Image (tube, rainbow, N blue to C red; front, top):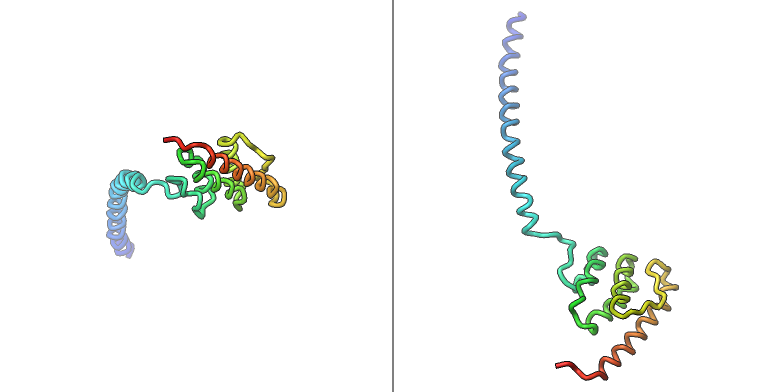
Amino acid sequence: MMQHTEQRSRPYDKRKERFLTARSHSRPHLWRVVGITLPLVALTFGCSIAPRNFRGMTHPAAITRARSVGLGRGLPESQVIPTLIGKLDDPDPVVRLSAHEELRRRSGQDFGYLPWAPPEERTKSVTQWRAWWERRRGSLAKSPQNP
């Protein structure tokens, strides 16, 4: 009786051994393929939240809006400044901070704006930014155009 049980277990052990051996040999190949393919796919598609231009300021993701702020550096003030002033009221404090820093860099003005302050406290500074832009835009309109 013992022999009969022993004979049954041997074919099972051989099948199990073959399965495990085949499985272990195929895994390195699989990981090699994944290791080569995955970086190529990533390079093709790129990072989906990285902004490509200043139009990223309207993106639904706050991080994309915040990162788009610096992409307006080569654009004219008349296109960038109103958008940045509008982002001083953005729901996300990081976007507000980025917009304020860019406005300070471009204008040299501050107006006491605090991006993390409650909306009531930010309103006075945002109003000052808008008034400054109206004065600045008026002075730009009066100045002679460069060829």
